Amino acid sequence: MAAKSAVLEYRGRPLRRKDNLIYYGSMSEKYIIMLQIMETKKVKDLDVATKVSVQLQLTDPDLKSRDRVVKKSEKNSLYAAMDVASVWLDRALSAR
Image 1 (tube, rainbow, N blue to C red):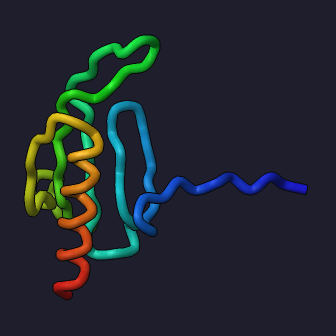
Image 2: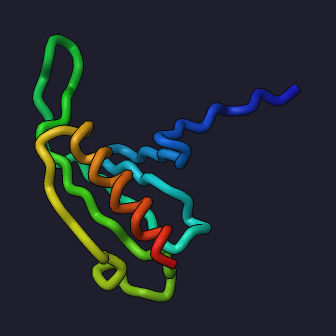
């Protein structure tokens, strides 16, 4: 019997992490959020993000990476970045 891996979600949308990049949303939709952790600090044994770049991007594979960016911002915590990301993605996907 194969083990099914759990998919991490935030507010009903999938999260994928690769090193310091976090992708929020589904590539099958028109928009996705890319979060890049730019700075961290140690709190006890844990690295905590202190500077996070947030980008709302189109998922069109035919566009160059710099042309995909619709909005961008920087936040001082991962929580603040995820909050903005959720609002941006909700608004972008509902404005179809």
